[in-house]
Amino acid sequence: MKLIRFGAKGEERPGLLNKNNTIVDLKRLFPEIPDIGEEFFRNGWLDRVSSVDDPGRQMDVRIGCPLHRPSKIICLGKNYAEHAKEGGFDSPGKPLLFCKSPNTLNGPFDPVLLPQSSGQVDWEVELAVIIGREGKRIKRKDAYEFIAGYSVMNDLSGRQAQFSDSQWYRGKSFDTFAPLGPAIVTKDEIEDVQNLRLTCKVDGIIMQDGNTKDMIFDIPFIIENISEDITLLPGDIISTGTPSGVGIFRDPPVTLNPGNIVECTIEKIGAIMNKFVALKE
Figure 1 (cartoon, rainbow, N blue to C red):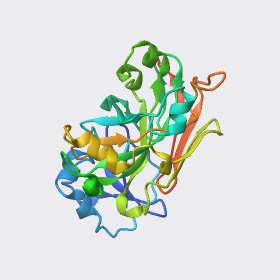
Figure 2: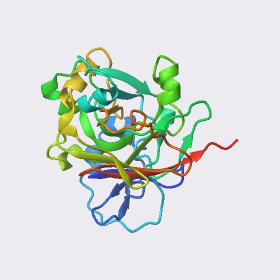
Figure 3: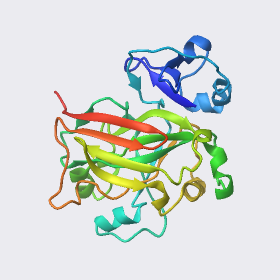
């Protein structure tokens, strides 16, 4: 099942994306349905909509970010050995965690705003895990029971701010800096999430080409580690790190400018594509 949100920005409706790319308007079937977020997952709507048998219809409509206002977006740094190596770092001995704020969430095909306060904007294709149940001190053997599904995220970075601030929050949390989508693909649709190819193209040129099997810390370990003393809530996002091939560590560095188009793809989930634009006054 592929959960989406569609419609004009700020007016998105929950829906299902069928295999023939038709859209099922869940609000039409269930007028009381909440937006896809904490209440949706907490109150059993994931199971309820899984029984929908509706052909949907073709719609010429914007596809929005598939998740509404999660409580937190937790990201991993250096979770692929080759990515750590390209930056001149050792692989971490335990998960390196940081957060992006919810204002970063962006539609899968919406423009990304280049910030005024930081240059050297860089791409990072990542597998995003969407939490479906509240949990704390989750054991790795139980971790998948707490997952609703998966999505594609571009963990964009303003490297100038990231490196000059001596912390990562600002450089990772500029508006629109977490395009997500195109859907939340439920976990039953993916046989082996730890063996998926993920790529990032800039203006059609492949810059990153990796596989989730190369993560240093796998998904169950990550969930166990985070939830030891941080309660995970339904709708939370865990973005699991990026493979090698980012722009800042190239020789010479390659970073994003107005007009660049970045496409991030993960097999069995889909692709997001965003154009970068200068922030207007």
